Length: 316
Image (tube, rainbow, N blue to C red; front, side, top):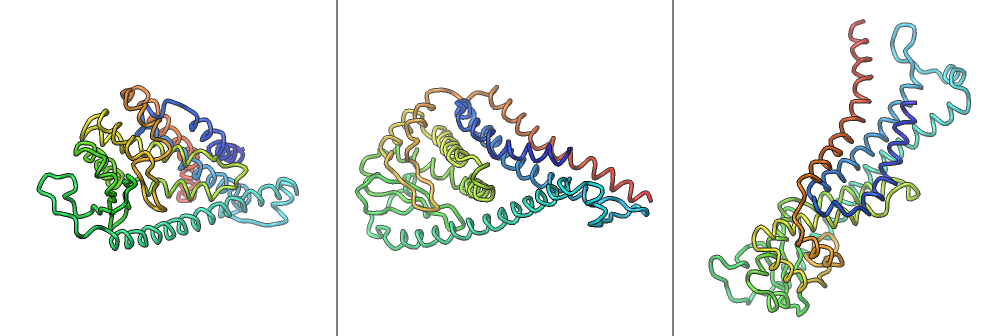
């Protein structure tokens, strides 16, 4: 029953729960808490999958006469019956496959993203305008990580990582006031400081690890929107909601290359709308409580029985 409970919880956390959460309106009123809840849902799904596998393994491996764990194929089949034994072995194999896919996908996404990011960074450094006039102290562009590209389209995006870059085109500089430029740069620097790229990589890997027929298709998009909302909140602290809204309209057609995070995009209207409403502390507290429960309850459900069994073995 423990394995069944954890299996059902895992299926809920990778399918119906993310779909329901992605359609909710309240996350935009508490983006930091909502981001925490999303991460708790993802971590709880992984813990539940592994917990189901552990519970199944414990059912297949029973203590022998001397108290040591033993496993015997004929004994297990006789005790469980062929249908239950085949289901247990199949579920255990599925858990192992998911664990392997998660590890492989995480490595693959990380390597591929960093390779694309490094190639684009080299291209940006090569094409950056070297003949631009220097700027004085206090100017928004006075930062060694900023690169200016001679492109008419108003674009602004950042390349996270060890050798980070913030890219701004001449089209954006021509259309943005100094305050609006500060808002855009504050938005991109917020992405870099918080390492939102790592959160998005984790959700991309998790999405690829689970089979398509059970995983949510909306989780990654919802987390991307929350990352933009969090960066917007940092930009508002630097300037004002009105200034940021004007800047977002100017660079709304910005599209980020692979591995980058752009200030504009298809969610611009949604983000501008939320700037008019303050964040809700009450909603945030409820979300933090739900996130804590999602992590604590499955962990304790697994830890307590195993700690009891460990204590019994140590007392022998």
